[in-house]
Length: 255
Image (tube, rainbow, N blue to C red; front, side, top):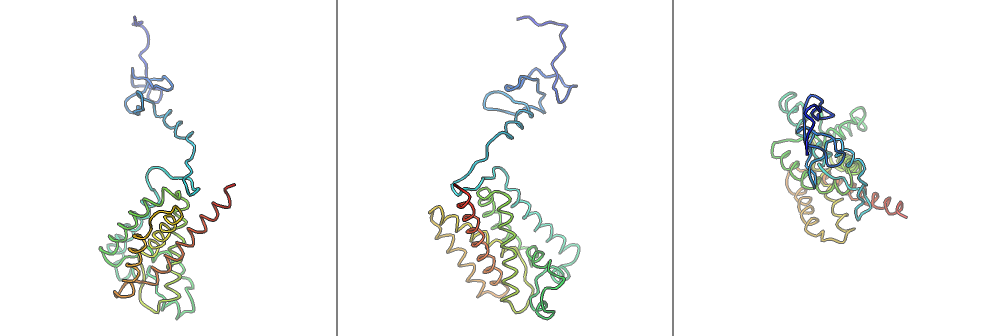
C-alpha cells in the first residue's frame, strides 16, 4: 500500500487544527484524542457516542416505571442543597438566627392562626439541621436509599416523592406538635424508606428488615428527646401513600 505524499493529513472534524490517524469505527471520520471514546471494538467519536445514547430506547422495569440510568442526580442535588444550607446557616447567618428563620415553629403558627406568610417553612425546615451529626446521619441515609430508589422510579417521580414526603412531614408537625423548633431531612427520608418498603412488597421481596429498622427509628422518636416523631410519622405515611398512588397510576396506564 502506498500513500500519496501530497495528500493532506487527516484532521479531526471537531478540532481542525489537530491531525489524527485514528478513525471512528462507526462513521470513519478522524478523531483526535480528546474526541475519542472507547467502544466494544475500537474507538468511536463523541458525536457517534452521543447519537447512540439518544437513540437508546428507555428501559421499563418490573414496576412499569422508566428507569433512570447513571448518576442519581436528584439525590446528589438534595445532598448538596442540604450541605450548602448547613454551611450558610452556621457560617453566614449563625445557627440561632438560621433556626429561627427556617425551622418549623408549630406553636408560633397556632398563635397567629396558621402559617400565614411563612408557608415557606414547610419546605425550608427540611433543610435545617441542628448539629453536624444530625446532617451527617441524614445525608448518609438519604444517599443509601435515594441512590437505590431514584433509578427505579426515574428522576421526576423520585423528586415528586421527596417533595410530597417533606410536605407531609411538615403537615404532621403542624397538626401534632405543640411547640419547639422542628427541622431536618429525616421526615422526607422516612417517606423514601416507606416508599421503598412498598416497592419491596410489590415485588414480593423481603421487606421485614427494612420495616424493622425504620420502625425502630420511629419508636426512638417517642423516647429520645429532640427527635420529631411527628415529622417522621407524617413523612412515612405520605411517602407510602404517594408510592401506592404512583403504582396505581402505572397499573391503570398499562394496557
